[in-house]
Length: 112
Length: 114
View 1 (spheres, rainbow over the protein chains, first blue to last red):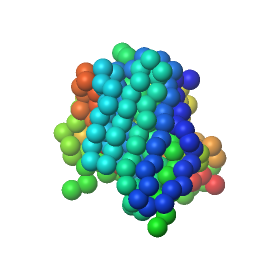
View 2: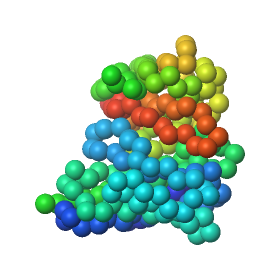
View 3: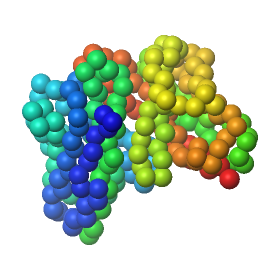
View 4: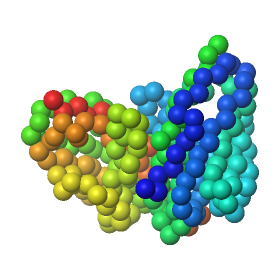
């Protein structure tokens, strides 16, 4: 399966702490994206990192990509209760840029 | 103002029935998708259309038939519903790009087959 896998499956932290989620995949990619899904809602795009990029920032989000290890990480700094959601990585494999394959997701719980 | 809208949001139906889910996007995108999310939150692509043409058709039973009357609409018709079809179905759209597509999702349609 080309599906990515997130680690951990679930993460519980306190507000103000940092949250780190990891994603691993199996084949060469064109790009990797992270999405957030609030309970009962659709997925929302957070950030896209291309295969020739190593790090990208967007507000409190920091994404890294290591193509040699076929892995990516999403760091959320100074977490807030509103960050509580499931986070998915999605990979567009080389030659199939229009098809995103989603990982299994990390459920993040941020408590006050 | 909803970018990708799908109806109905909730659908409860009996086994064997036929049902449709409609989807419309007002983003001007040329590519639309149907994804299925099961009870374990696993999200899998079912179909993708680009300018009304089918470009991705994953291993999906032929009871599922997508229809794209124009590039802003992609409907999903399901025949002879089975218990295992119970899931959340997400419509999505994107603008084709060689550098990577950002996908915009609808809010989902919760299908329960009883």
